[in-house]
Image 1 (cartoon, rainbow, N blue to C red):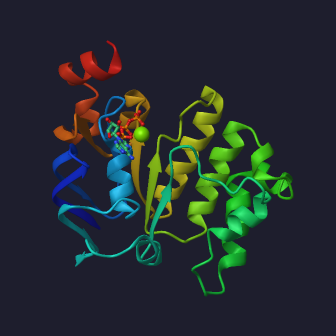
Image 2 (cartoon, rainbow, N blue to C red):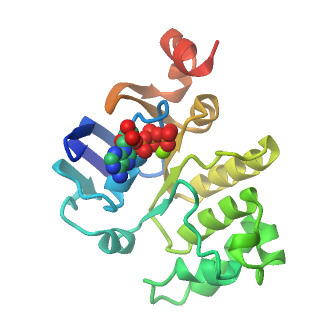
Length: 233
Ligand SMILES: Nc1ncnc2c1ncn2[C@@H]1O[C@H](COP(=O)(O)OP(=O)(O)OP(=O)(O)O)[C@@H](O)[C@H]1O
Ligand SMILES: [Mg+2]
């Protein structure tokens, strides 16, 4: 579904992504783990074209999309749940969700809204409440819901567990499994390596802008280097 080839990215003189090669197959949950500053968010931004990519190529469904802009990427089915949620604070929940569908013209918007309210009942309960007044967990749910309203083929998530209580994190990760069952492909960025590896099929490890390891998540979780560097075991 998604293939990244020899991708480099710099902020000015500073090289942040170095020769990234990565693949995500349809229906997979693929995780990217790495420490603060490794370049995880930058990679997601390049994927959704919020940062222009400088070298390398990105393919989506076999098509070279390296030169397409962020709106075109949403149209072909790439949706991002950004770090820090990126909600419209002065809009209520329902309007935030509908904003997620702004590029769609099909008739399924209403039923997708229903589906999201089923996934996250608290959003239905508070649908007239301003996004800015929600708790952190509710905001994360709304951010995921809004991305889903674009009816994505590939969902990009930047640290969905960040700052949330374990019980909320559990709820959110259950929803991710639910989405996978429905056929949504997920690229999950997480600093919580245990959570990421126990949720995903495969994973990549990013260190200083370079992919230093990759493999099946169930193997990585037992790897001594991963245990020492990322799991604190
Ligand atoms: N707009 C920017 N201009 C210049 N440098 C930047 C910019 N955004 C990020 N960086 C730098 O790029 C590097 C990678 O940042 P990035 O946000 O991608 O890391 P991250 O892996 O997402 O970290 P975290 O886990 O803390 O979210 C960091 O050294 C950061 O300081
Ligand atoms: Mg980040």
